[in-house]
Structure formats: C-alpha cells, structure tokens
Image (cartoon, rainbow, N blue to C red; front, top):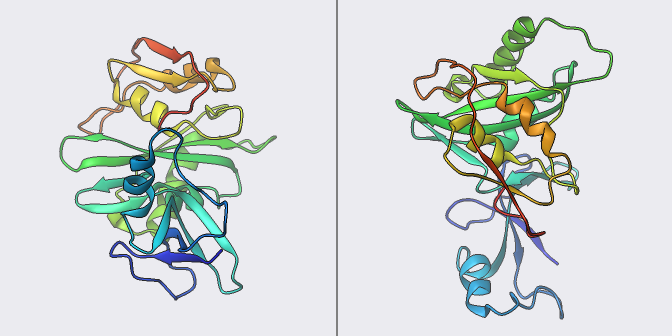
Length: 231
C-alpha cells in the first residue's frame, strides 16, 4: 500500500509534520477493501469520490521526519471556530503535553457568536494533586502557545474518566450532545461503562454564549445494537 497525506484539494503533502487527510493511493492490493456489504454505491461515494485516485480513510494525520505516521483523529473531528477549522486531535495532543494530564478529549460545542468553540475534558495522572483553576489556566496558555489565539480555547474540565467504547474509542459525539443539551442523546451499546456519562452531565450545559450554566437532566438512550455510530 502507498499511504499519502493530502490537502483539502487532494494534492499530496510532502512536508513532514504537516497534517492532512490520510489516503491510500490506488490501486489497492488484491482483496483489500473490496466494497461495502450490500451497498456498493456507498463504497464509491464515501471512500473514492473525495480524492480521485485515492481511497479516503477518513482519518487525519501527518508523517514525521522519520516516516512514522501519526493519526490525529477523524477528518469529521474538526470544529469551526469563527470560520477557522481546528482539528480536535491537534488540540488534544497539546493538552496531553501537560505533565498532569493522562488523557484528553476535545469537542466542538455550540456558540452563538462563533458557531462552535472548543471544550476540553481531561483526566489526571494517578497521584496528581493540582488546583483545577491553576490547571485550567496552564492548559489554556499551552493551547495559545502551540495552536495560537485563533483557537479561542478557554474551557476545560477535569473528569475522573472519559466515556469510551469497549475498544477504547472516546465517545466525542455523545460528549458534545450532552454538553449542548440535545433533546435526544444516543449512546452506542458498545460503551464500556455508561455510568461515566454522569460525570459529563455533572459539568452542566455548555452555554451557547460561553458562560457556564446549572446542571440539567437530559434523557439518554442507549442504542441496543453493536454497530458504532458516528462518535
């Protein structure tokens, strides 16, 4: 297989460390990714039409100076902050640089002025003792240093655990739905521990104006099938 990193126009990015769309150059080896069961049209529209001559994996990432591939997240894990497209994977990578942070997840919550804004959740390393307000200030400064003021990042909360599927996938879509207070929140049946969602709900709504609100009660429906949704 020939892995390539492409920009939004489908041009190959040859500079190390520049993030783009991870794609596989066609033709693929025999027997690889032959189609979508029962829906051959979806194979074409979802994976082949985006970048002619390539198979679009739907992942975003980059290749470093040594040729190692870094997957930063899904290409749909991109938030639009006042017209600026920001990768949640890049924001999470910066948050994880802090010595106190074990894991990080960033989602785009609704903002009446900017369209969306970044909201971060972090878990702490075992034995870490740090003031939450001090940690928030340090993380905001870290994002400003590495991403820039364009990220307009100022909201981050510490939680005991991040909601994940049994395979370890963070349920970012579910987190966003809870913080946005959507009427229907569908959680895949593959969630590892549904009680973890209570920690997210306890944070309260992410106010569209950018201010925190009180706690809320939103009904959460667990999807009774094993198929992952778009989290």
